[in-house]
Length: 289
Image (cartoon, rainbow, N blue to C red):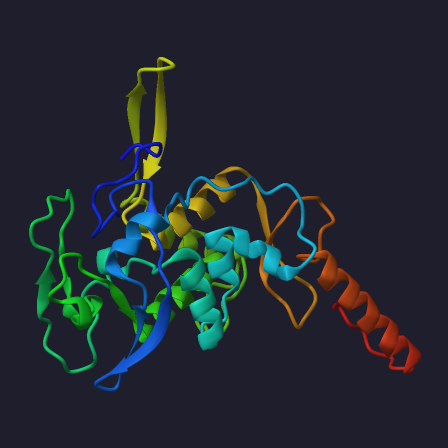
């Protein structure tokens, strides 16, 4: 789909350069917690956006929250253990689209038989079979199907992405016992994860009559694919990922200058005050942040 033309597919606008977002909340059903839409189905058309058409990163923000202007950096810094953090992400960017991600589309509780669900009446270029847990039963009889994501599957996808970013940065991921010792070996492991997601993305081109020109753009089947694609564009553009040295923050950010050690002005000021406090208290302790 051309990015300058709105989609007519109200149900699953995933094979395009656009994504959708609604208002979401946490809903429990049969002991399973879901991230489900609280908005109306036809509101999808009003909430389409282009996750790949974002403002360039030119300077560190004043506050750590400034990195939430980009979905992949928001996802890399997300505290998946916090319900408020998860809802903050999905209400800003939408669901990850796990029903269209290999390895997640068949999600089901342990011991439950896989019963695939197929979106009927929609001609798509990809496999449309996925677990029934991604369809909201509250809108089963509606003309427009509403999607939801099990919170457990969402958290696993977040952990995998953050695991990948840490490896790509040459770090040993938290809670990962068998990470390679050498940073270059860790980056090689990250490349395998990245290539698996890039295989689902592709460039497309279209002709614009007025003014007469050819243009190109990327297509991605889910928001999660977009996050990996955006990270790949950063890495191939030689943008340097770093972790904020202010310990209470510790989030990933992209350095916009060679000596950048903090993700934001606020973290720099807080780290400076923290060092001053320990000096005044006479603590003979080295504190990075």
